[in-house]
Length: 333
Image 1 (tube, rainbow, N blue to C red):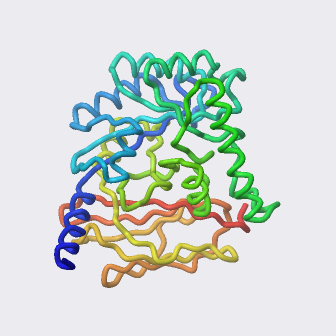
Image 2 (cartoon, one colour):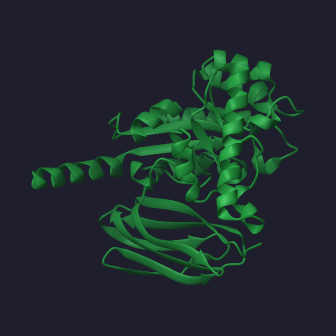
């Protein structure tokens, strides 16, 4: 019996490793006022064309949920289109493009902003819902929640986070009759302590702004998304991100204490490695120790409050495997 269980685990890991699931992230469309969060609709058209040409399935969040929970067996290639915040430009510019190409997409909505200038109205939300656009929770207040630890305890922050996501869901339900069960962290900033809150409140999945493809080994509440804007919206960049595979690395330590980051973990996929690098957003590429499939780096001094960390490995065929994490530094700026 034990031998059969080991074989099943190995088969599962193999199927995970070769699946390619990438979640696209957008914010504004055709809005030159905000270039760092803008995507032009001709770029969106190109992204849709590339996804089709490269043989990717287009999934809804429900499809992704079924995959993440093991209800959908998959070893192919899929893309999910998501949009954050709920700006009016989504309705005016992106919505017609998605409809034209019959592409499902989802809006992570800042519920407290609905009806304000530059944001969706409730009538727009209801129309999009009636046309099978998925809506998900992007908070009520859009606060940078981890940063609140500078003025309150972790227990107080957890209460604040829970109340905010519940308020967003309640208001959305009262306005539309729909209950949201997916969440995207405001600014992509989160703490691991938020995962249990989301689970307790009935959320199936939660999404970051960490780039990279998704593997079900990453769990349910730290799903990466690829932002497609400015230089990251180009055809060459989209082809590049769609070529990457999820790095399977079991993290043993990822802590920031006293402004010092330490990281260690065991890499399982790819199994045959050509080279491994580690990168921290405020530092660039950093020295690491790689031995017997273990990756270690640090302690490394950090000055910023938020850093994205990635570990990248290439296999013998030069295919890149990658995974990102977010590290919060209480003492950073």
